[in-house]
Image (cartoon, rainbow over all chains, first blue to last red; front, top):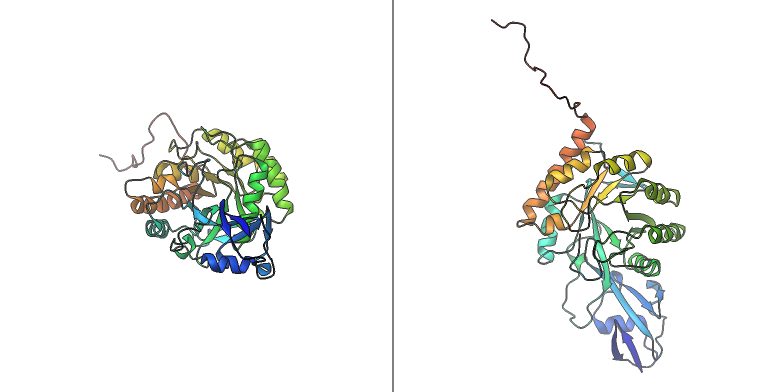
Length: 76
Length: 257
């Protein structure tokens, strides 16, 4: 099935869990937040949250930043 | 002055210099500059993780959340909804309820949209966030932010990244008298004397990013800022002498030939 992860299309197996998607992406779950269709998934629920066709997934973490405008070149 | 620690919402800060983590050459420079600054409160942007390059490093590998207090910000958010989304994601990705709340009103000045800021602050406080609002040097807005539950306010000294220093010291002073919570001067500092002045005026802390990261020698500037904030704090506690137009001799007349 087809999902979108951070704006990019990705084919994953039917019913793949959030935990397994992160493992496939090589991402440590304790350093990120995951949003599926604009709803935040709690970290403890990653293994039990199955993805569905068409889901829009965002994997969010921390980057260098102070204060920024729309583009990353106005910080601080 | 060893016990002169800043405490906000039960959180104790070792340093009154808070720093951003943007604009550095790489994570090593970020780490070294922050170490040189002595800051223990560091603000970070909430952004998409790079999923295409698995080798891409994580900022938190360089800034241990056990050593530093990580303050996610909503930088780049122009609406209340966006700011709420980023704040919630930052909390979910991080380790605390703190958020540096920014609702930006205009791309050219990056001035805060204070109406949006108040609305977002109110909602986030209700959700249990410790909200540090990036605001204008407007005492009335600062009071409103305190009214909705912000445990501190962060007025700008000048536009973000401008390095103009404190553009309106009188407003800042009025603001500091108007609110009964810590005031952290955020944005606009250009060099060490600006930071010292902010502290001398009575700020409880200063937050900066570009002034350090954009200096020719960021590590040196980080150290300079550490001392500037410290010196300004000490001077503020000590109390400056009144300004007078004419001289007052400091050596005794007695004993002269």
